[in-house]
Image 1 (cartoon, one colour):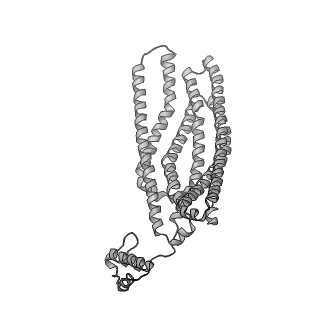
Image 2 (cartoon, rainbow, N blue to C red):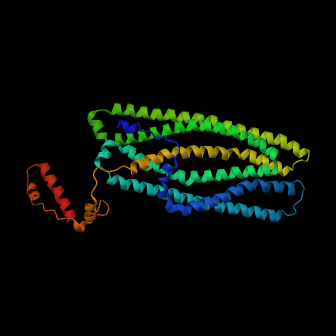
Image 3 (cartoon, rainbow, N blue to C red):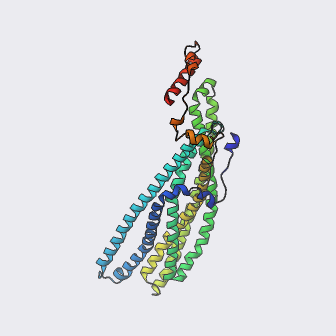
Length: 388
């Protein structure tokens, strides 16, 4: 038991590990294609929205005219309506992926658990099995359905924003780009530490789940032996450890977010100072300045989101390893091919080939004066009746 509890899943990112999940993803590849395609459109809309605002400022506000406002408003409304519809269908596709992948993983694990030998259950706590079937499966399905999609959107959005900024004004875009390495270094520093403590939280949560389950199912033993205080002390120690790990992760997050906001504010200030001077010197239009301000405020959020999702993607590999560790367990006792061909297996039994069991001697046991023998007899008779 101790060796099992100390097992760690902290290998570096590996495509081989994720490839083991492809059989569960393949039936829903159509939904993956739908949600990815819609997120391309959503990224394009998010990138183009500041350009629409720039057009409105330069053509309607600066010139103090309403000529062409109606066609502009119609196009803008249609774009927003198309964005809303895309969000609906994208969320529907992602939810379908999450629900179905989670269901298939749970079913595969439950089916495999029924085929494993008794020795596996003798060495593996029920709480750990429960954590794999429920918590790990849920996290994998959530990461695949939402995390990968959000990561795809963030990469498209960041790349498109910088392309447009360099197209509008390379000098101002270069200043904003100079801030990105600082954001990246800070993000990597904090994300690695938050990833470590999040892994600690998940490991302790698995232990707490196991202890809770064992405490409830073994309550008769605990009461008969009078060890409630020991159980309470052990459970309190585990929850206290999880509380410390979660608090440490929360403190790191509380420091990280204000730093990112500070960099965003610095970028906005640089854009305002330099861009405002260019507008005053008529070297830049006011609408173009509004585009840079919008991008400077928003651009660091998807960068932060991308770094966070990459960390979660690496962290989710541990969940896949735990699930596949269960699915790759081999039973100690395996029927030969000849036995399976004649009698079937646990799920597809060929009862027509089963030999009839004769239990005449069992009938004599039913008249035994020993209660244990009588109970055993009736169990055998019930089994014979169900097979016959």
